[in-house]
Structure formats: C-alpha cells, structure tokens
Amino acid sequence: MLTATTTAPARRTAGRCAHRMRGLAATAARHVAVDLSPQAVEQVAGRVVQLLGNSEQQRRSELISAGELALYLGVARPWVYKHRHLLGGRRIGEGPKAPWRFERRTAMQALERHRAAQRGNGGL
Image (tube, rainbow, N blue to C red; front, side, top):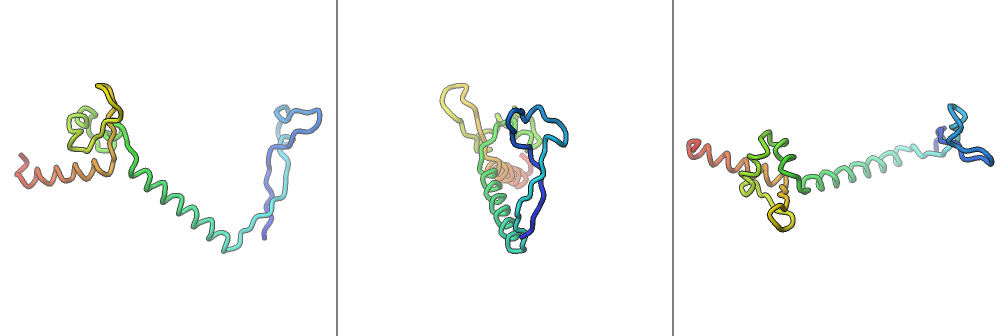
C-alpha cells in the first residue's frame, strides 16, 4: 500500500469562510492511502476498458440529427433530408415538424450499398 499526498480545499473552520482564504492557505495537504499494486492497477485498467467499450457501443447505436450526419458524411444537410429514406432516417414524434434522426452506422452501410449499386449500373 503506497501513500500519496494530495491537496484539497481546506475544510471550513469555525469563524472563517473557505471562500475567503486565498493561495496556499486555501488548500491543505492530506495523506491518502492508495493501493498501486500491479493487481489493483490491472483491475482499474480492466474497468476503464469495460466502461469505454460500453460507451463506444452506445455511441454507435445513438440517433443523430441530419446536421450531424451531414457533417459526418461530408455532404450538405439538404442532401441528407432528400435521401432520408435511403439512409434509414426515422421521424421522432408525430406531426409535420417532427425531427428526423439517423443511426450513424445504419446510414453508412446504406450509403455504401447505394454507391456500390451505382457503380454496378455504370454510375446511372
């Protein structure tokens, strides 16, 4: 078990407000026991990888706006709206002004299939 020294805002003392103290007086050194054994570091690293993997998976399936998809694809936003059905767009809500949302991965796959079909037809 290793010990690390950290500085943290000083606790409020009787009669003094913490926000009035300035500079070094505003922080107090305190000792904290930290387990930096190889096993503990491996366990933390494993958890970080797990959390990053979950967020990457979640990011892949989240819905994005037409503007975000246009930036990602390098096309104009009106082009995305014109090809919304090709790109797997979904209307969120009801009514004439309900926004369109897209799944990035689905849109990319649809666009690649569309481009491959165009190449197969001689670009028509």
